[in-house]
Image (cartoon, rainbow, N blue to C red; front, side, top):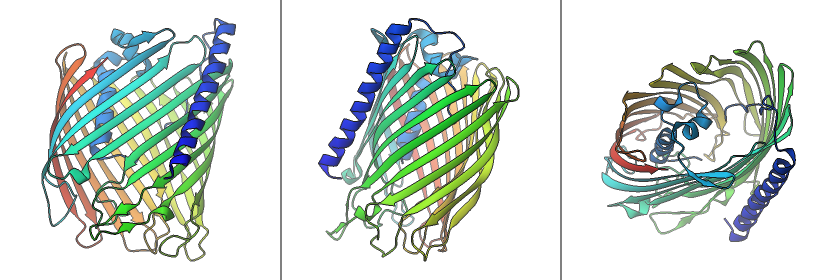
Length: 457
């Protein structure tokens, strides 16, 4: 990715944050107070990350707001109400998390034939700056992860996820949500789009920005959201000494979503949603001679439930279709089902369930895209005052259009966290991943066990 483009995107990101901060602070000074009912309309539930980094992020969130402290308190406020963690900087609160870990894996290259074990050391940092204004809200996040492989330094990775989220309370019943972010990630071993002869994972750079206007009309809510994301891939070094050109994979997406909801009762709501996404590639024709540009449409309807912190979430069903500029590609379509629920059967236990369907992109020769379906279930239980137990299981299925290829990934993990002190936690966990593919010789299994030491403030 050219340096000038990266700098330009960072400048845009900074300008958006600075402009929003100045406006919000000015509005805060003028208003002084806000009526209690002036609450923002909650957005619908919304980077390609490694398994270790993804699970670390989930564990880090649990460290900031453990389930035994939440009860019926909204998750966003649980941390501050719990024990007042964080450093106050005038009208902001800075929270931080630092983590060091060590893992052992028996299949570092996700291979079905030549499995190699390795020890992996990780350093993770999470910083969040949250405003404490009477009106409006600004949150800045910085998450970074560094992994070091003892025997295979070519697999070392650096991931970075930064974002700025600004909510402007325009009127009592109107809010504007602005968000921008940047992600540095690596393409995981075993990915169908990563060359099997790659000597190291491919770096991916993602820049995103969005704006959403929320309006409440008595029991009805309307949310109009527009977003942009660019995806740029570094070239991949191969074992034969050559470099694979990935410029044909670079693309950007624009999307628009309209969501209309209606509160049937304080605990039950219904909604409908329309989406449109357009994907444009930097190169019209890829390395295989295919034209990858596309546009997709979607519609779904569902229900939301909220039972005083006991059960919260939503479920929807609908239909999505993607069409392509290349006349030789057939459309990709699917009936979709999405769900996200959190159930707290007691003050000590939290259960989350997620279900999603998406249309995936690919540069595989002969395939226009794929249908991806994922289901996940996780449980966190405060076994003792200072001991948390957690378990997670997930399965994902991807079926590629126009070619005979489908893939299923199973993940299972167990962990335990022991609070050594107010800010210090010692954790251990085990993860198992099984990958099944219709392609010959592509199946593999991975076992990983590790320990973590986390400091949160």
